[in-house]
Image 1 (cartoon, helix red, strand yellow):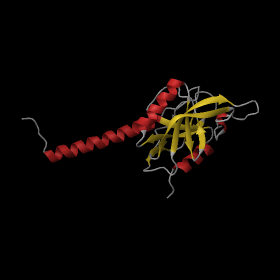
Image 2: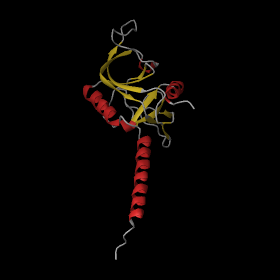
Image 3: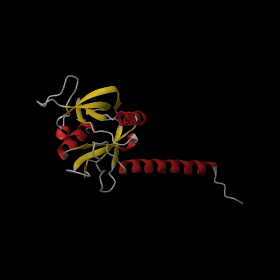
Image 4: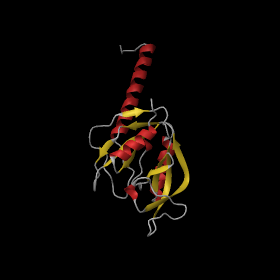
Length: 195
């Protein structure tokens, strides 16, 4: 006669399987972080999978915005309606907001880690897994890819980076990468609630 678990045992097993599925999903998202750009591909961190810290709410929201890029003027200034990034990684490039942004107020963040790039100097950054806005962020990533525009990351009123999206990917694999560990840690501290 086949084994038939009791209803309470089936319920407990289902809960255990669901919890394991969530742990595996979060772990796979955190260990396969895909960079947003820039025009040349950046490699994801190669040291073991980063530890993800699930935050109920961010101390400062992350605004994700499709942005059009344009070179700065010969004098290094941005044309009217365009802004320069707060970090020197995109020196000489200005950006203008397009369409409706998505505001991420709750997310999981991986630890700041060194991320060797395929070319040039290493970068530093962390993964961002939106808790509630993943579908909207994924749609913005796809839109930026189709229109060949950048995807701006704005925190505390500053444009931190705006890389070109070189391939569409789900929001759960989003990564913020900056040219120095000091900049990555500064942004991380702005996002993580104190206490």
